Image (cartoon, helix red, strand yellow):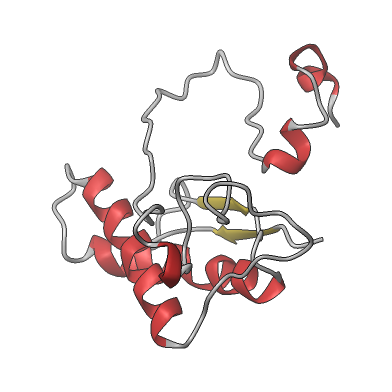
Length: 143
């Protein structure tokens, strides 16, 4: 399995600030591990350069920094087992790494900000490996 995850608790000493990430490691274990180990740290590192009300900009900077560092270290993602589909490339629009695909892929995240209230019982974060197999009516039966 090439998917991975990352967790950071007590961000900047605040127990209410946490970071969770699920990574679809289409390019192999090394790519997923690199993102799991570095993305949260890079978002926190970028936080010091941004104002509090610029959370989205901070997150974007963390993604772009992680992508840049991964590529500097020689990281890349390649086609394996016939997975690539669009122009001989991935069937996704965003990725970290993939230097040779930068014309078609971006590393900037899509960000959606939603209020988290007590009305919500749980939050599911997963890659397409789960979403491809679990139907909408089954989400609440997980766990």
